[in-house]
Image 1: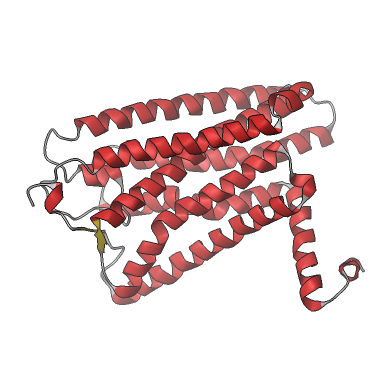
Image 2 (image 1 turned 45 degrees about the vertical axis):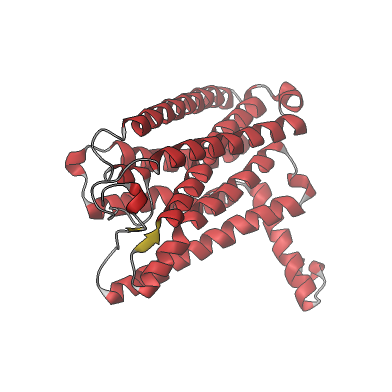
Amino acid sequence: MSNSSSTTQFLLLAFTDTRELQLLHFWLFLGIYLAALLGNGLIITTIAWDQHLHTPMYFFLLNLALLDLGSISAILPKSLVNSLWNTKAISVLGCAAQVFKFLLFIAAEYFLLTIMSYDRYVAICKPLHYGTLLGSRACVHMAAAAWATGFLNALLHTANTFSLPLCKGNALGQFFCEIPQILKLSCSGTYLRELGLLVVSVFLDLCCFVFIVLSYVQIFRAVLRIPSEQGRHKAFSTCLPHLAVVSLLVSTAMFAYLKPPSISFPSLDLVVSVLYSVVPPAVNPLIYSMRNQELKDALKKLITGFFSKALNIPSSAYHL
């Protein structure tokens, strides 16, 4: 094909050409997808249902769960359909929609994680100013800014990428539409504008990362000064899940995009892409629920209350 206007579809990279392994991939990814839907859905429902969780930290956690649902739903359904029906094709419009949605949710999530580090910093280092700095209006404005920044980032990258002429076929070396893979198909010298946007995005991401690191340096210094062991444990229990989520997302995404070409080959690229695009939305609910006692208690109340109503059993019976 001479340019992008003559392209009607892209071909995604399959995990395997063996039919039995394709079905195994389908069931494995379906299980991961359902786990992500269940885990994030429970977090959203629990926070919305329990009045005690209507605080800035849980408001941001609710937004994080929504973004996780969006990012994994942007790419996995198409991969599941392709594996089930033994096909690799995705339309140009479908590919553009996938790129836009995934970039929107993943960029907004990263900015939201930065905001969440600020929330933990204020809660631990400046507790007397917490209500002033993180009032309900401020929280809504910060969350809206994260979503808006993700939207603008996705719009610019998607529009710019799909305006490039393509000269090198239509086969993408990834199981979902990813900008670096599309740039490999563009004509020589036409992708410099998109590379410029990517450099700007990387710079902004680096600024957010530095902010998160500096916030946690201050947080850990403050926590270690807490005299009681119980106080330190409570502080760590609210910080460590967030730090684990940030570490998982940043480490896998950085390896995916910054690894040297000498160690880049299809099987490794597939595994790394799964680690940064599929695994975090599925394990984030588990990370937060394991360390957060308030969330576990609220989730237990929600589940027992649901079964009490469904089976017409008094909820007090569960405490006998």
